[in-house]
Image (cartoon, rainbow, N blue to C red; front, side, top):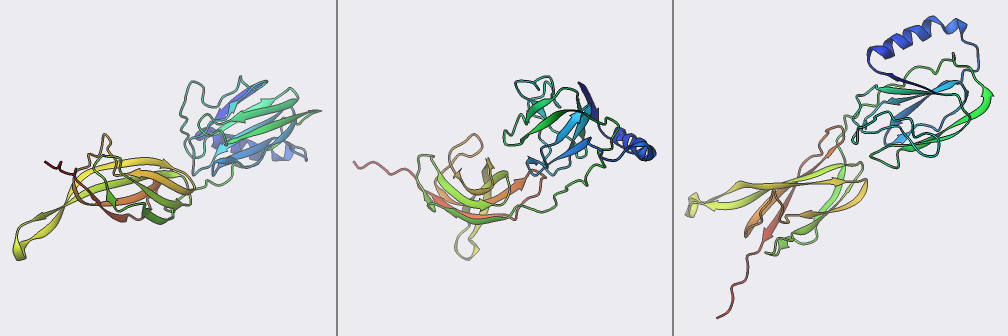
Length: 258
């Protein structure tokens, strides 16, 4: 079994070598490529003996590994000894298969990013051209967030907070910056100012979500008063949705009757 890792300049050299030798490569090439993009494999490849599969991280998501599973692929890992893989756009990983069978590979961080390589018992063509790497899938669009609402605009004093509900079209990180609204001055000179009070962050998934809002955390200490929170979602390409203002009130503790 052969493992080749190709990145950066290596890709350019490989492409040049492949172009120079095109006339010598017979038809029916079977070396192949698999794109890792949008949290899935582009295909589940089938090759013959001696042929190779190249995985390409084309984005926008790149925090994936190609990690072999039992019973016959545990010797392979694109990111050995790394629990949280992070690849550059355009990175690639190549394996050459010389034993027939079905080989399962799963991402360490996302079990749904997985697939199999099926190797026949027929002699293959190791010199075949797998073709060029697909164009990088760059993401410049911010997440679409809809139906943002609180299950209650008035929050009790115990620090449990409320639930913020919303819909989103891609995974990412939801964050809220909290500001306490404080009145200053008297009469005509009175005005309300915002004072930063903390923030919260939560991982979110595609579809309907609900996250704790204005609850007591290490980064937010709820106190009695009126607040406004600015809610947004950042996707895995660091694109941010427009901020949504969410007004709410935190009640104080009831005084005990004498």
